[in-house]
Length: 260
Image (tube, rainbow, N blue to C red):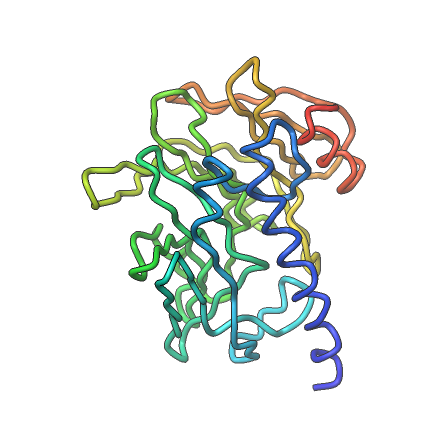
């Protein structure tokens, strides 16, 4: 597999840097990021996560090569857990994103794909799988995470991702509700006409920014990659406003820094 192995170090090199950026994009006002985590920086740092076990058993190649990940390593304090997926599944993702719930619970947000059912967004803690969205339902159908934040100020997190950024191009929100140790994901809104990934990219061109004076906003290109959008959620619906021309990653990065 001479066309696959050389790409693996690139994916490994990007992942830790991007993972750090994801957390900062929501925590520090306007930090650089291409997908986001959520929560307090100190809390989020208490859970660490990384992908292990590169595998070519799911040859989708959406992220630039046919190598995905067979395992997820979680470390929190003195506890450690390695989640090894069955042979029919992979983590089809760049890096785990650490998010923190309003109660202070740390979770790793990842994309998990099934050989028959395609992708879903899954949340893990140091005990294992906690909750996940439904699988898309078809092999080689993927979703690209945007991030997690309390977008409407109700004290609960919304998880944002683009459902099939190469095909359906729909932004979807799921609300994460807590009841004690029980977590529940409920779909609350969606908006078509956006995308944050093209086949072969080893990055995701979107994020969530919080510039301090207003509610957090999703920053994402439109489906044609001509315009960069700011998307807000009022608790019921998603609305978008034009920020300017989409100039690849630089445009997204500038606006996530609140400099756009």
